[in-house]
Length: 377
Image (cartoon, rainbow, N blue to C red; front, top):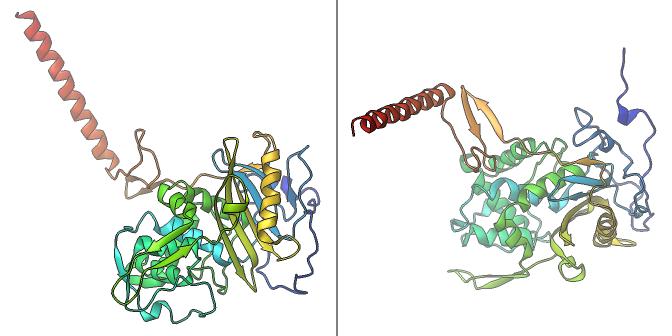
């Protein structure tokens, strides 16, 4: 007997769209697919069409082919359009690089740029402007990655984070992190988001990735910086990096934003804004430059999300995988909680039991001795 999933029982409700004169007649894109288990984050999200709460205000019509709005703190998904559909990421993929490597790299570490870091980059693409043979701190590179969307910074960071495997190791770490976050519709081929064969993400996955990155104070600080001064070093003068997210100035309560564009991906965007104590994240993929552009569409979707009641939702952002078992050991990943604090524990379970039993015997022994002494006073 074949059971039809609830999300497939009815025809999907189409997303409100607006035609754009800038949209190409045929834009290649990875084929849309359903999640492997059909319901990551809730059955209502497993649709190529619109997911919106009953009685919600009218959903804005946008050119983005996929989008999602969620509460960053509660994890409630307020609405979306094809939230799990495969799309091409462009530079918003840099958020996955940050979520993966920021916990692993020392911001004060100094790294020398190699020619191989730049050899496959179009000089007309978005660059921080690193120079082969010159040295930069990891923090300099994070500013270059997140403020000016430097593809060169992405390559250097991925190479450093990949250890002996180099840049390829950094990209593999990104894909491992995506699996840990349950971002099952995400696969990286390049660290920068420049197009690569078989590279894709989804609006839902981008919200998971952003939520993880935004939990870090250093990430929030980088993203909120308007201008970063990179000090002079031998072989290069001091220079400034400017935040390319214009919504920081135009949208009240804007906390962070990341733009992206390639001919294949079209315009992509991820933004976080706060209003009346609520922090919302908006993710959109496949938008066109007209009539609103990705920033105008993000503005419309954020306004729509803030107009909803905090308890209105169509799903939730799932929690990352934080606990793994290996060789009879319990390992709690960074960000997990053990005894009320984050950290890691790798004590084998039998050893932990034996240690606990030994401590109990010692405590009981102390009690007995004290009672005997009390009787002989």
